[in-house]
Image 1 (cartoon, rainbow, N blue to C red):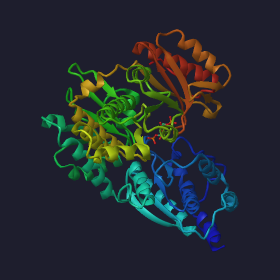
Image 2: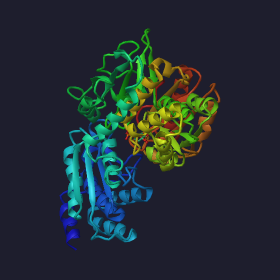
Image 3: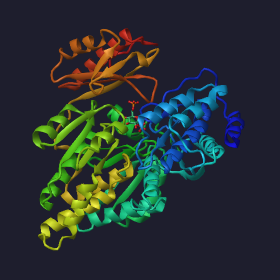
Image 4: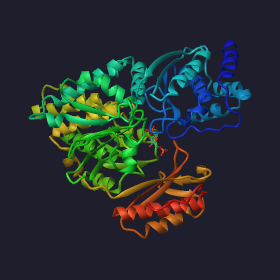
Amino acid sequence: MAQFQEVSRQSSLHPKPAGLILQYGTAGFRTNAKQLDHIMFRMGLLATLRSKKTKATIGVMVTASHNPEEDNGVKLIDPMGEMVTPAWEDYATQLANAEQEDLLTALKDIIQKEAINMSQEAHVFVGKDTRSSSASLSQAVLDGVSCLGGLSKDYGLVTTPQLHYMVCCQNTQGKYGDATVEGYYKKLCQAFIRLTKNASNRTDDQKYLCIDGANGIGALKVREMESYLGNELQISLFNDGNKGKLNHQCGADFVKVQQKPPTGVEINPGERCCSFDGDADRIVYYYTGSDGTFHLLDGDKIATLISTYLKELLMQAGLDLKIAVVQTAYANGSSTCYLEDTMKVTVCCTKTGVKHLHHAAQEFDIGVYFEANGHGTVLFSKAAEEKIQQQAEDGNVSDEKKRAALLLQNTVSVINQTVGDAISDMLLIEAILTIKGMTVQQWDAIYSDLPNRQLKVKVADRRVIDTTDAERRAVSPAGLQEAIDGLVKKYRQARSFVRPSGTEDVVRVYAEADTQESADALAHEVSLAVYRLAGGVGDEPKPI
Ligand code: G16
């Protein structure tokens, strides 16, 4: 077959380093960019097969999100804008790891297992972030698509959630929106303006927001979007990529893990600030107090704000829809208590990775999902969207109910339901604060976080750690969980867990306790246990 001959020919231009083994992880393949050319070519092939199989457009995003500039990676996007299914993640790993001479066999194996009709048309959307390696790597994806006869559309520089959005728009024949970057801005900004325009007494100060763009694609896209926002939001953009390095001492991951403001941002006390990550699918908020103390509002606080707002609106609209919040083991214990005990909403816990949270959130009328690191969105079931629309259009309901239903309708439109999206989440949060007339300090005061600490430990092979119970308990190596249990008992209100990262070559350690000193001490002691029992390399972890 001519297509296979073309694959053979082109694959020799994108050779796999012999013996290199990579795994499709938490969010696709991710490692040093120098090792990824063959992976990108092969993911172009796989996306084409997935498109033939689903008879729909598939997305391929070249990005390593929060990782350092020298890394890169790739995420595959399924027809409705969601992450690719686990079975296809396995195919991705098989295809990625086939030695050069076995590539055609691995490819044919997938075609046969999935009974793919190779004469079916295929369409693939490709996007990339601002890393210097992204241009040639996204070309390798395009090469992979073309040699199997697939048709590609290269969106060039876009945020990850923008590409998810385009794929969904395309496969819903425009029902979700226009599959263009302009269409994305128009849909979100118009909804934002409709939400905020009637808010009374909103001062210029309240419209002011300081954004840390992590020196990445999010900064470029915020600049592009500004003109669609009218005067409703006044943005000061820092770390826009003009001089700083991507994700270096800035961005959502840095701010969340280090619990301090990013460099390169001028923050005045009390001012509302937010940070995006490298591909703009995560966001965290923060401010500094007049005494200089740093206050972080992470994914848990965002989920709480959004679910409180939605619950109130549903009540005002007279709609009986079930809201649930989906979190991971990293969720601060205080947030879970507040959501369950005070707000009385259902809370679920899943493994790390938006694909898991997204899946769980689909089980409810309204599923609010957020990882503590600021990655999340809200999903509305089709039935929930229909009920909201009926109530907004029903001529017989009271003005109050109608007003709330209209707000809900515009809230649905401002949200990118395909995946966590820093830009969409930011507009939603800004709208909620405006509608509720709430300051960032009042939002922060909804509950107080338990002091916590996250650390990384280097081990020879992080796969020796296996976990269960949504990653809250380690089942291997032997003795590790018992060691953690013993250490946790020494502190008050304490909790700790460890898990291998799916995006970096490290083991992550999380600890929380009643004081920062205790959380720090517990995180350090657990890190030592990991180092000793799971094959730590390099220097022993030092106290914080
Ligand atoms: C990705 C995933 C997130 C996950 C994060 C860290 O984020 O999309 O769901 O929380 O990696 O994962 P891990 O702890 O396994 O390294 P991003 O923003 O880097 O794509």
